[in-house]
Image (cartoon, rainbow, N blue to C red; front, side):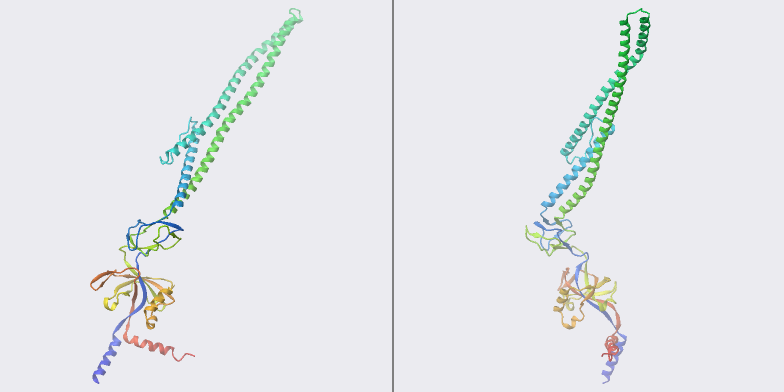
Length: 434
């Protein structure tokens, strides 16, 4: 009897003095630290080639699947040709404008494509030379007409000066012969000859003055035609340059877009890793936008646990807390647990996946289900201390997707509190129901 009393007393003392850990239990799964990379197409396309198999290791940039890029390549080629042509059009307009500014005999066109398309450059150079030659021909014709008119004007002006100099003499002679006629010293016909000479000179002088005015107008018109020809040619080339530069920017963006579209038809590995969940195996098969074709699990990457904490526990779970991770496939009673540390906890609750809840329910009894997350839960990231486990003397690598149970240490309490807590709750809540 004394032994029983002593044992009971020791048990009571231990329950008051002794402490146990308080843990929050959360279910979850192992995930890569950098997350699995999902490979998806951007649009509906036909599978041209498949270069990988499930479980195959790949390096970043390796081609995984090639889709038919015939249409995308055609768009890329078309926009690239248009872009190149607008560059040549702009260079041609600049060369002609430069030649107009310096009155060169021929335009000198730079190669904006740096030798990439010599035939196109040569054709553009010939076109520039032809356009400028047409302008020069018209300009030279007007220049020749202007020179001819100026020569005619100079000759008429010289004749005018001569007439202006000789007309007074002819007028004086007429006057003198008139005086002599009045005195009957000369015949009347001699006087009339002098009068006729004076009249003809006056008429010629008037005609010369009129012709000079006419030639001045023609010369001015020809000069303005030359100026208008140059101005019109410059305006045309400036318009073509502006249009080409505007189209150049548009075509460049279209080319970049088309090039990216073409590149998107070749699906490559975003990181070094292992191919998993390959969902397409048929050459010539059709894939749809955002369809998951495979996943690439990052290689040699640390593993974490994504656990879902119940609402009743979230108030006690914080970053930096220790945790014990139980791997479902390896019973912890035989193979132990893995130490972990809480890295972060979500600030908002998420709806638990019903499929996960059903899976958990099928694997646990009703008593256990009371401790499982349901409804709204909080996501917690837990860092694993190791990515391997010792199983029957072999080192087994843990892989993403393995189901786990995480016990997060949230504090400590006396053992007697554990037993008294239900009684205190019953005391507070009893005798108040309707």
